[in-house]
Length: 186
Image 1 (cartoon, helix red, strand yellow):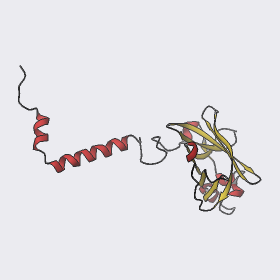
Image 2 (cartoon, helix red, strand yellow):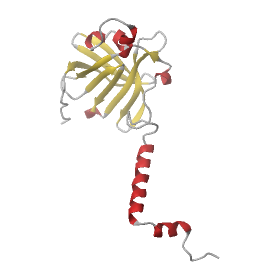
Image 3 (tube, one colour):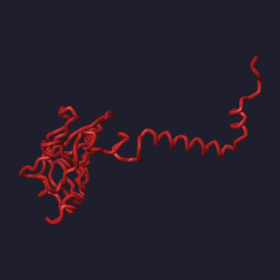
């Protein structure tokens, strides 16, 4: 037969001051929000930072690429300086609705009006041309992706594909900018 006595948890809750309950609720909410991010905090929101190894790629120096002339690379010298990558350089489309940030050997690209964000590191798989390997987020979904950059007469051409090669975005022409203010989507 079941007792009408309150359970142990009910007794503890009844005895706890209201401030303690609020604190416990806040801590629980914080832990749940951090758990949604996966390992680490911040980054792409996919729970992990880009890892070249997921693609079977190895790191390559962005400042040794065909786009190096458009970047802010250290002067020719030691291999360590070359491997450190570029100082931060910004590129945007002509309508200022997209922004690409190249820093060190990483690309962060966002096209808010298209609901797309990419973060990846420059690397190479075997004898293939180097490219950025990382993650893409697009209107609620995310996954592994590859971004290819090409130097063109007036800037950079960017295209983003999923890890099977299916085109997700681009190609789009990006020009070097300083401190852009992105335009609205309207």
